[in-house]
Image (cartoon, rainbow, N blue to C red; front, side):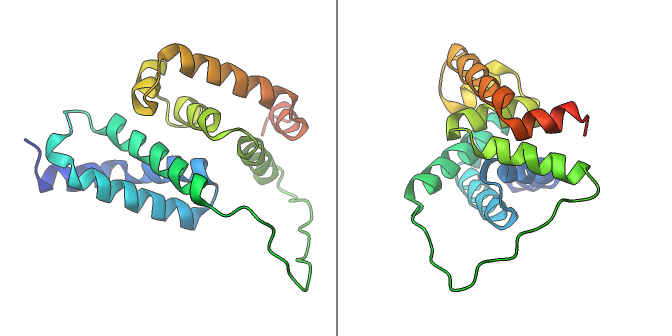
Length: 165
C-alpha cells in the first residue's frame, strides 16, 4: 500500500521531468504547471491503487487531461486593436532551433505529439507509451511513423535539425 510519504518522494524526484513533459504537450509554461498540478491531484486521489511504478499512470493522466482540455478550448480568433510587435531572429541560433522544434511539434495532432514527446523527450519505450495512452504498440509505432514523416517535411524542423542545434 502506498502512503503520503511515497507520493511526496515521487513528486520530489519526478516533478521536473513531469513538468517538462507537460510543457511539451501544451507548449505554455503556465498551462503546463496547471496541467501537472491537476495530474498530480488526480494521482494523489488514486495513489493507494497505483502499482509499484507510478510513471505510466501519471503520464497517462497528463496525456488524457491535456487532450480533454484541448477539446474544450475555444479556438476562435481574438480581435485586437493593436498588432503585437513581431520578434526578430534570435542571434543565439540554439534558442531559434528549439523554438522551431516546438513549433513543428505544435503542428502535429495531439496523439502524434504525445507519442513523440513520450518517446523522444521522456525516453519511454513503445510498450510503456501504449500503456499510458491506452492503445496498442502497433498504434504507437504507426503514430510515431506518421509524426516523423510530417516533421521531415516541415521546413523549420528540417532547418533546425540540419544546423545541428
